[in-house]
Image (cartoon, rainbow, N blue to C red; front, side, top):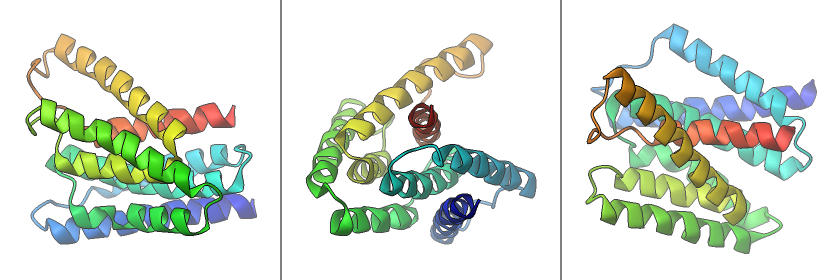
Length: 200
């Protein structure tokens, strides 16, 4: 139980700090309703309970901080279609700590270059319309936290989830094929998927 409280606290602090920085940067976007925020905290609690089953302590902490920030950013991206630079500060701080005291700092560097490079390629291919620079920066930071293997898996899972959701929305008539979907929610769902796989 104490470990669950610590993980949930880390995740909640990351969630709240990211959200505050995002809204401070873009004040015209209204905060989420209390019901939506409550549902997100329930999601964080369930995820942190799963994180207790992950063997590596450092990995549990990294996942908790990353998850809190990504859930907050996903909510903001869904409602604004934008990822403010200031909102990436909590993840960037986690990345700096990972480089400073992590057991394998070169894995973080390689992860950042690999996944961030893939993001840059997607930004160039999509001419900046379907994949923004905010998404590129997010991927680079997440890659540095998770390392090359987990980050590349996360990116692949995000695209699979995005493709499935896009097909469902297109089939229901809510989206046209040329419409761009927010990418951060897909990354958040992919991280939840990855946490579940690590747990079981």
